[in-house]
Image 1 (cartoon, rainbow, N blue to C red):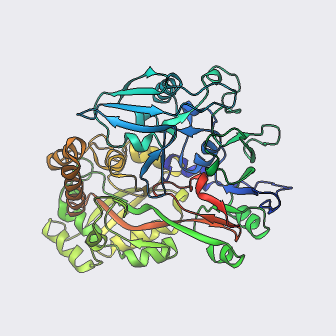
Image 2: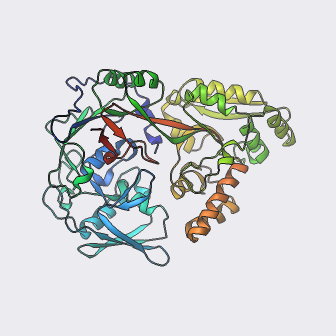
Image 3: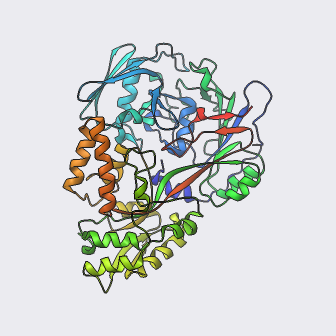
Length: 504
């Protein structure tokens, strides 16, 4: 998932000296060493406060999660081997493995799991809200933990495959080194002696790990490259075996070195028409104006100009992996400036209108010119205000009726609560539509069949009502050398660690 809170960090150009980091994917011995390029350092190794997305490989190296997700996002056993809900989906019971120990020798038990869940809910992770519905977690017996919810949460199982499900030794909870020296039950341990915090992290295989079939390397090194040029040079110099790329600008040069590109359409790019009630800009209350904005954009041209051609034009925010996905909604609004002008005229804006939007070089420089030009062509004048590093803060205040943005395409319930529902983060005006509320309620509480039907209808309705003006699904590109094979992870910026394997 695209971590919008990290825009500034990803945009920063910080030259990192990584001397001595020559390629280490050695073929000597049964398991080679893997050197990964990562875009951000580990914020913390405390499971309670852990980040995910681009920081997920740090966490997966040292911690297990209660559940695991396969590359398609389907939930599989992890530390929990079985799980079941009660009739109204407000009590989740997990059956845990009984042969797992943390690296400090402490046994993993239901009590440890319960403590970790409550700590995450009450911690400082940017994803702590994923467990906001958790009322309590208690050990029924040493291998059974019971989660009681304030209300059902269709995304909970998925959250338990991510940082909300990380399991840390209870003995580490009060350790002074909790942020820098993790104690989990994961496949590796952090070598603090060889790690340079913020620059390079070294992990050694845990010889007592319970799931040896998922461990493909004796050692993993993660080197931080906040600067795209530094990453490109490291790839050219054979200093990494695989890496996440901050953008697609250097893919031709990367492929020329013999690296393979593993694409994933993780995010959507385009406009969020935030002020749907017209409280700040009355014009946006009229659905015809919002539809006109959609017709004003040449999404295919924008994909080439802004996305370097890497991605797929779309006018829906739900991803291809979603039950809600409808191929016809990828082209619901075709580029049609004449139709845009006609809709504006019908809405009473034949002479045009003015729209205020924030801008920031954090998201590039040319994109703002292109937005201004394409909207001007249909009679909409955009007044941009440079928000700089306050781009996200000002957007969510909210200080603007509309904005350009790059947002992740989460699984359905997470996406609804991040972008669509009344209290969603990216619905800062808290726009409320009775039909949307009713559909969300069915997604939340209905049967599987009812939920699937409702989320499809929700997607179609949001497109027809033009809550957004998406341009395209943006390709994220993970790259690897000839010695390394990768399977990308639906819904996550970084492939899951066990899906990065040696080719021989």
